[in-house]
Length: 117
Ligand code: FAD
Image 1 (cartoon, rainbow, N blue to C red):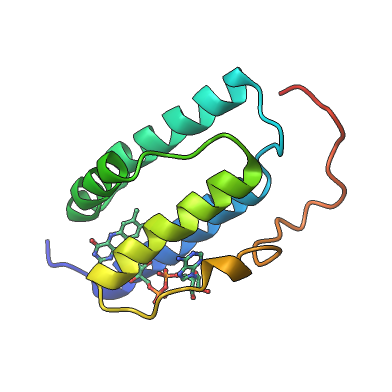
Image 2: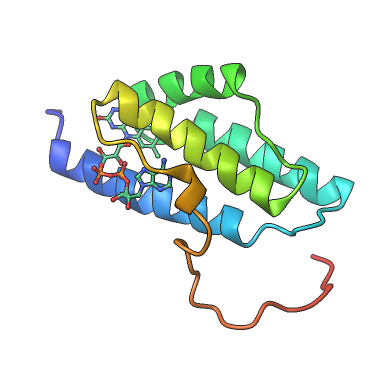
């Protein structure tokens, strides 16, 4: 089957949106279990990402830049940096990661306090 660049880009935008939004909701003070869950999620995301070339490249990126899971800020900053690695490879504009703050809003309203998941 022929490559469809439009579909590939659309998948990328949707995936990055979920990826960054998930980081924006990661606990500020994660438990060890939260941290393991995020690390595992990222590793499986990189392994199972449906575009095979993208997945194999992203797995190398993650090997070089291991997921940061110590806090929400660490995770969001890390995700921004690895997305920039992909941006750079694809010759896209880099995102200013100091502005990641409230850029990704899940629209899900007030965060439930201290809820164990
Ligand atoms: P995207 O890169 O999709 O970004 C979407 C939006 O996110 C931007 O408009 C901007 O508002 C914001 N953004 C940009 N940079 C950042 C950042 N650093 N941090 C936070 N937010 C940011 N495509 C390929 O052709 N080859 C590949 O090898 C490839 N590998 C990929 C690997 C992964 C894991 C993913 C998720 C996608 C991959 N893609 C790949 C798709 C590619 O990254 C883009 O998603 C796609 O080309 C669409 O690009 P875009 O210019 O619309 O912006």
